Image 1: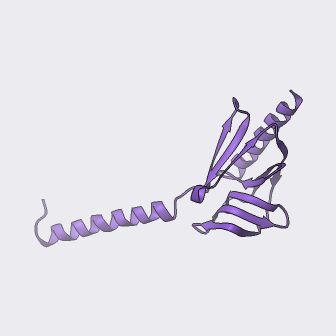
Image 2: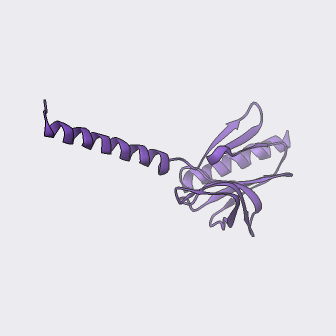
Image 3: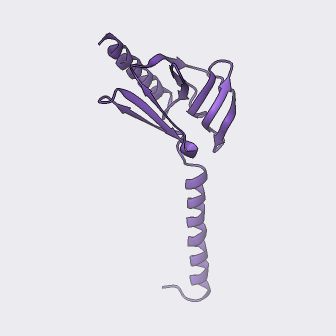
Length: 146
């Protein structure tokens, strides 16, 4: 197909494209957190950047709230990845000390607390976060009435 100088240029070009895609994947496209719900175990769990994780059992939850314009405060033991994905332990006037699983590209977040800990999180977009909030509250209230 190509020989000599043109072949070398094409190989270098392919290498640069692959290097760019790798950098993008590892530094810019990482999600803020993963959320898992288990009806069988009656719990919701979170896992985020740098091996952070939390589990909340619905029988132990004391509150679930939706914040439309949160003040996340500042990181105590954690930080921000990709200039938008919060992880680790944070502190703010609104939430106190909490574990972060949020992205700032979404304007709203859910605050969930039990007697020992609080987590602040959101997912995908504002509509999905709102829907998840409604579903969590409905399930939590159902579990309290049983």
